[in-house]
Image (cartoon, rainbow, N blue to C red; front, side, top):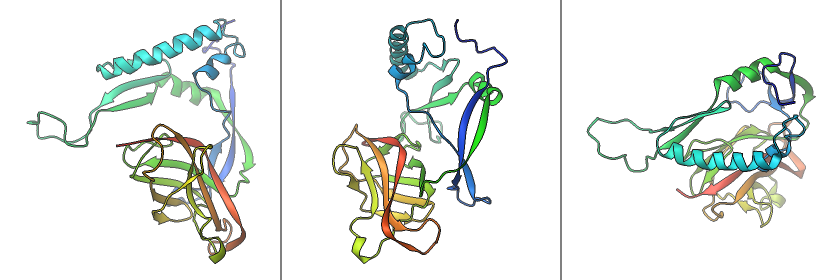
Length: 255
């Protein structure tokens, strides 16, 4: 039996926990945080075919999906707008112009614009139920990281540029004995974590840092906050260090 997206009795369930709000100016104390399943790459997606009664072999799905993604790269770069059942993709040319220009301004580049398809948005809206599963007990949260050079969230970091991190319980503080141990670190899981030396903003919900230029281009980094600040008492210092780790990784690249 193949997957039937038109079946009216198919209801999906997503678990959600209350997380201390990370939005500036929020009027209520909590946001909702989806409890995601493990991250899947193309191979992982194909491996789920049998679970969802897809009759096409996983190997065929993986090979076809990989080839389609490679082809989309070239088609979008050649100016095509791509429309699929899952997403729409096109080139955007940013900036404002007088009408007499012959080339893009310095530092301005074409950008890909990806949007979930209307069909997918409607499917999620109509078929997904959210189950509330209490308050997230983690002692702090890294909710999102915005690369100010590209404007992308939770995707990339541009070496030497500004990164805005939003969450809760993020303020970096320490007593005299622990000053050298606290900070915002970029951790690739292999080498020693790299500390951000310049903090432009250091608040419980927002940290702004200059991304260290020493990170390795192409590597993926998780964000790690090590601090002694208390999440429950605004000005309190804990006896022990507290660690907050991002659930996503960011790929380092240069300008």
